[in-house]
Amino acid sequence: MPDAAFLLAALPAAMLVGLSKGGLPIVGMLGVPVLALVVSPVQAAGLLLPIFVVSDWFGLWAYRREFSTRNIVILVPGAIVGIALGWATAARVPEDWVTLLVGLIGLAFVADRALKAGREIPPRPADVPRGLFWGMIAGFTSFVSHSGAPPYQMYALPQRMPKMVYAGTSTIFFTIVNAVKLLPYWALGQLSLANLEAVAILIPAAIAATFAGVRLTRVMPERLFYRLVLSALAIVSIKLVVDAGRALWAA
Image (cartoon, rainbow, N blue to C red; front, side, top):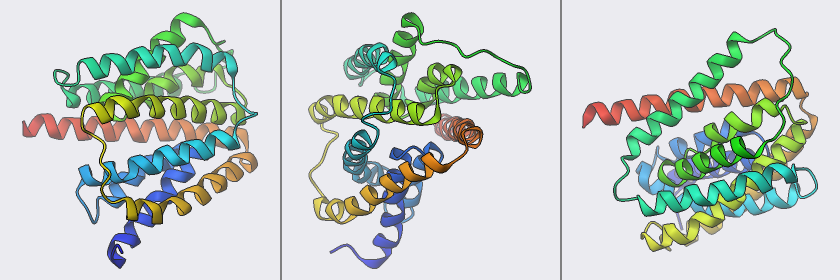
């Protein structure tokens, strides 16, 4: 059995993952740092990967009727191409530079939204060229550095979908992305069957948190929801830039 110190960090980390899969993206990024308080960051990421995958499927069930079919059909082929590119170049692509680029893309989008605050901007409809491009970038960056959300939001946020449709589309898209990543991750030796006992203990907490996240998303005012999404993008992007900057400076 895992010890008490591990559980005190691991249970909240699993619940943060579940909440994010329920539609609250601002908390998902905290899972690995919280668990890294008691294990190494690499171990934390590996331990939480099965939690992400299982939570994905419960999120998929929760949002099975609330998503944009057109966006999924456009984004997924691009994401699969991006994952394949990540797999093919896994030994050559510098992860820190990819992380830095993703963070800068997210910050540029947030800055653009801030400059346009107060102006009436019409929603941008889903379109194939942009969707394929950003889907490919999201798949690639998700594979290389687990940071597919900022490129995805570059495409999805300007559409201003109803909050539940946005949350469902995001959940279903990343469920597919994470499922497709499993085979190349296994082929590259990045999946481990270690710590299955700990994973089994954490999964119920993550599942419960997933449905709590769905409930919170339903009752949250739409304007507040999108403010949280944009805030999450800003926080994640800053963290990516800082983490990449530290790694590149140390190198």
